[in-house]
Structure formats: C-alpha cells, structure tokens
Image 1 (cartoon, one colour):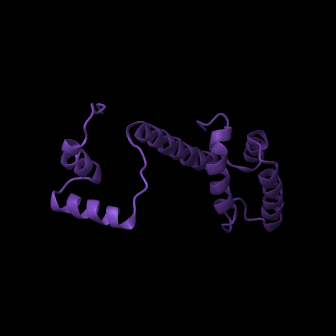
Image 2 (cartoon, helix red, strand yellow; image 1 turned 90 degrees about the vertical axis):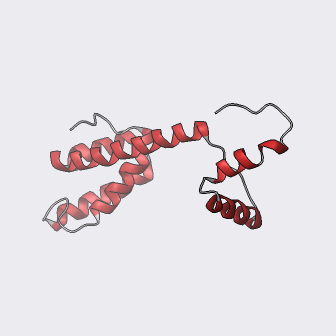
Image 3 (cartoon, one colour; image 1 turned 180 degrees about the vertical axis):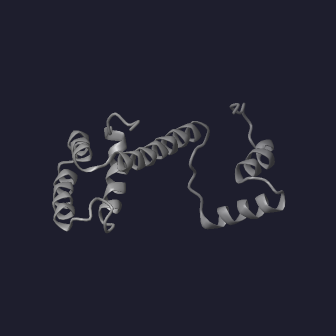
Amino acid sequence: MTIEKITMADQFYATQWLHVMLNKDDWLSSQIDQVVKARDEFKKICLANTPDRLNDFCKTWLSPTQWAELDKTITAARERRKSTAEQDEHHAGVNLTHRAKFILERLSKQYDCSISDVIEQHLVDRVNCDLPSN
C-alpha cells in the first residue's frame, strides 16, 4: 500500500469510490452478513465526514489488493487536481452570451485555432493598452 493516510482532500474521491465498490456483489466479502455490517459502518463514517474514521474503516475492511485499488483512484484524483490547479494559473473563465460564443466558435473553426487565439490574434488591434504576457 502506498497511501499512508487518506487526507481531507482525498476524502471525497475515496468515499465516492468506496460507495461504488461496496455496492458491488462479492467485492468486499462473499459473506453477506459481513458486507451488510461494512455497509452500515460506512454509512456512519460518511455522516461523520472525517478522514481518520475513513482510514480506520479501510484498515479494518480492505484487503491489501483493495487498498491498492483505492490508492490508484486517489493518486489519479490527486493528479487531476494538480493538473486543474496548474491550468487555472494560465486560464480565466469568461461568461459569454450564446451569440458571442457562436461567433467565437465559428471564427475558431474558420481560422483553425482556439477561441483564446481568436480573441488574442483578431481583437488585439482593438485594445489600446499594454497586454500582459502569458
């Protein structure tokens, strides 16, 4: 197991994954009474909403193979968060009317470029100020 501890940031993804997996037949155990007990405990943990209790649950109920599966899920979620954070440093959101979006999309197809490129390359002459660099 490479995860030492599920963190608060990981908790959402870990909980979602466990919820899906616990509803699969025979994933946790072939003994239905054990599965029911684990599901009941998991519901209480979800209500408590603390990573420590989630970690304890995983230590109690998951096999090393299942921990490894959870680890892969959490690692992928961390990478997505990191990637999104890096993208956010270089991108800004803009609200557009449907008409403005249609026009920008049409121009981006016509010039085979992104909407950002349309704005930067085709509207730059209309801006009367120093533009920030990328």
